[in-house]
Image 1 (cartoon, one colour):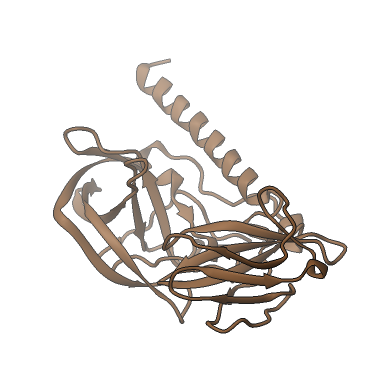
Image 2 (cartoon, rainbow, N blue to C red):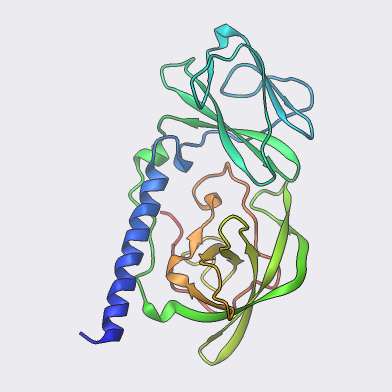
Length: 272
């Protein structure tokens, strides 16, 4: 076996392991496929669907006012909730907040923040979507979709407004730089966001497969660029955002320039 064949075999094995890990995460208890609601929190304490208590939020934090008979406990630690429980999360973040066992099946409540507003999402112990899940369909691994690119950071981050999978919500994206790469003799450029905790880059993009076997858009994460700006765009690992699996998601759409005119026949397909 040649050195190139060894590299391809290794890359394919790593892709298979990545795909298994992705499927395991989607199928886990109280995972993405067990979402059952999406509810914005009002300023005035109010009842919500599926769980008891009075829920509210201001610009700083969210609040749950629950009595002992409501049956809530904190997600971490299992401490009974009596009275007012508050929690704050960062923009575009989420956390499991409380658990409720008021029915035969446990429910968890996730707290999230999008565009300055707080929301909760309920998750059941299991759902038909989870029970019937057999894995995300993907294109066959193809080493030709591992493409070398060049990352150039912007002199200062570009802050832009973007639409999302929900018509009632837009978000702010911070574009860190551009990635240029060649495909079939032409040059293309994608705008990338930067993950400050890991140094990783993410591009959210449209391509010609959207609506013809893939979701309306996908995203691709990649390791931090090398010192000379080199990055590897492994489109075999192009992923669906949560909106491809559930209606209870807020997912950022690509910036206008992240439109690839060709078909990226790699990565995840639209779930069946």
